Amino acid sequence: MKQDVHEIGLEAAMQATHDAEHGWNLDFLPLEPGPVVSDISFVASRCVHAMHAQIHSRTDQRGTAPKQGITFSLSDEKASPFVWDGTEITPNSIMSFAPGGSIDAIGQPDFGVFAFTIPIELLEEAAGAPCDELGAQLDSQQNCKILRNGSHVDEIRCLMERLMRNQRPSESEMERILMGDLPRVIASLMRSRSVEASHSLRASRVGAVARTVRYVRENAEDVPTVEELCDVSGLKQRTLYNAFVEHVGLSPKAYLQALRLESVRSDLGSSEPEKAVIADVANRWGFWHLGQFAADYRNRFGELPSETLSRGTRAPTNLRPLA
Image (cartoon, rainbow, N blue to C red; front, side, top):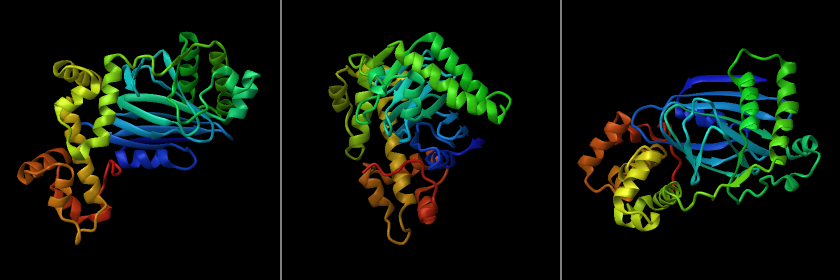
């Protein structure tokens, strides 16, 4: 089975990935004003699911991987290195997630990724050994593992290209790739022991940015100061600013502003128009100058807060409430 969904908005992209058949649970926070457009393709066999997704704007991505097996993810050839939970991921890396493992990434414009989920039993059959002996990621409470091996990664990317981006393969070829070739190459990669823990770059500026991003998400309502963020990151103000711009694409202040505005929009979109008070929602997320807030809101979303609220629960939102 193959399904292609092109040029869709962010809400439709999240709904597509949330589909029970695919098992993903992802939320995207746009980090730039304007609509976010994406292309998503899915293929599936009896028990292996795969997808290619390309998001055409800078986004903050959070959620969980499918629970049906171990999920593997790699960038497509055109993707630039990106930050994943404190580690910079290059095109020569594959990420391995436990069933239901957490996902946390800053995707750059035209971020493209291949991902596929293989049941543990099928992977063990291909490897001829239990997954725990291969060093597979089985604990959803732990960070993802990073597997690095250029030749194996290239072979996997070629297989995913044949499935997703070239001329539609026959049903028999799709079945062979999903049920045979992908498990075989992944098993070989894992046997090579080219595994690197995802916390290996924690002491770097990448890790400092990841810590700061998590702190901002958890404390956005309190509007943390730059001084607080420097304390959390362990970096000086100018260094933190430069690191954020490099890895997130925004300054710390701009990232916090985007998060707060998206959260207001989410709250307004899920409120009953006759009961909600815009000022109360804005104040909850640290906006006290309502004239400036309304101007910033309109600049980002192309409408006033009152227009979002007037549609009530029908209003499109990009972010589930953080609190």
